[in-house]
Length: 381
Image (tube, rainbow, N blue to C red; front, side, top):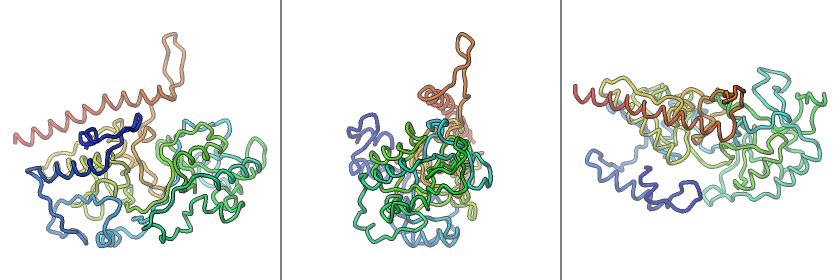
């Protein structure tokens, strides 16, 4: 995947973007020409038959109706989304903690589950104006007649229904007291912890169709998020993905029917590289099981290991949403380092990311070495 991506790259600054048609055709050509791969384009419109002992389902975000229905029957409707509502996710260490405070509504549950961003009336009105005037993505023709789910309306749609709608929805201030004033704010934006590590925060109820550039500008109007760094921006689009933290074990096996594994976007990852990485892991784990080898799993300090851990262990099942790999999925590094003169220095920003990247580069070869040794031992036997 990486080689084909490099071969079909298009200018995109520091990012890797590809010519979609050339890239997809090159991948297809490589697969169809491989001597150990047989391509059968017959549609799988139901659950794989029992005689198929090792199956990987990697049907992507537009899984066919027949297979979707079969998955629904085995998971329950709450475990398969057909129209996902994605709220933005913020890196916790980019939040201004001098502005926000920790409190659950009506003090229910753990106070640290939510961070609260208070707004004055003037700030709220300015935010609504910016929201209504922002540049938004238009629906494609096939999406146009798809109804919104009332539980996950885009925030701009709520604002269009009335300027006070958000104050009685996701931005309601009731049950929350700003410790600096001793009173409720005019409006509050809540940030909910999104992973076990506490490195990511979900902006509660902020599904949106704003274009990315406008979205970042508008969201940074929220007090406490002036310098926010986003692990993922929000959006709404048709998708199919399972609730992996409940349904998959640490080897990507489907808990109700372990002869099956899931891989790629249907597991709740986003992006070519992420989908390919989870596909590679699913294939390696399936091959190890067939050969009777112990599974080899990358360390959580690696990009693949952190993504696998997010899917199968660390993500909150109740708020699970598709995710690109990002530094917020990695185990956090030590918060301080000792400088040459013996003083403690807080590790943050670029230094923190460089430390995480260095740890990943050190840990991944260990995984690859163990995998190759396991493979060689099996071949020798």
